[in-house]
Length: 387
Image (cartoon, rainbow, N blue to C red; front, side, top):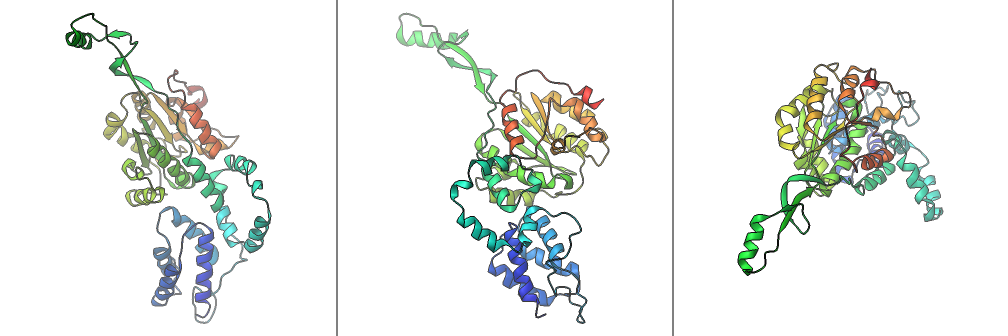
């Protein structure tokens, strides 16, 4: 029990380095709560600290990895679980960089070295390196910088002609009603009034996979989707794992932290299985007529790994493609040079998308911005890839 306060404060410092905000009040609350539970029960300790330290769903995985690395079952006579911090214990699996760096012993030395370097060093070259780095391998500081760069990205979806007409100086059509109204006002020479089709950017619909295999990327992409939602109108965002959830209203809040906190409370199937076919069927049945009008562009963000083995997925993907102007599939698995469409879900989706792009770093998002700058060209087929 004598080691408990010291180890708990050290554990809280590690979580802060990994990006989980923990203040003195939470540490004091944990110190008061732990003596009330059975310290020899690992699950009791885990969930007691989890309930006090974790506020957002995105922090849960970080907490779990740090907890597994930090705490161990002690072999002391009193049988207490939280007895000693095995800082040098070997890891069972590779940890994210922010967890590894949080456990590093050279933080002070690194900070001193960074203070002695000129500020110009962390300039364009650092930003260039960050743009090509995979989201899954980023440290906490790099993720914070990547989120800042994401907020500056803009999707330049060009305007398209609608069915409605508006007054125009040199429009192709004569507006007879406006012409007669103007002539009645003057009673003299008739000046022809003209009109042209209104120009408006099409809606943007995003369907994002939040299953366990997509968790690391979905958290980063939600910051990008928040920036897009607050940058333009007619953006609709849906998240799916085993079910479909509309989070457009939650992401509309200006503060990204509050917006993502609301998303975490609304979505119930984070980091679980994936039922892509069932989720697309639910979207086609309940939402397609509402949000896919006026030539909408649809982004489907998923790795294509379907728990149902692609059952019914081809039919729903084909219906989705026919309902929108352009269907773009963003898949983080494309970051691998040797990627092959072997999964049944991937093979079912490929023939029904207009473009197949990677989404694993800032460069891939910049490429998406370029792709969306032209949404009017003919559809491309991927039947040869899926064969």
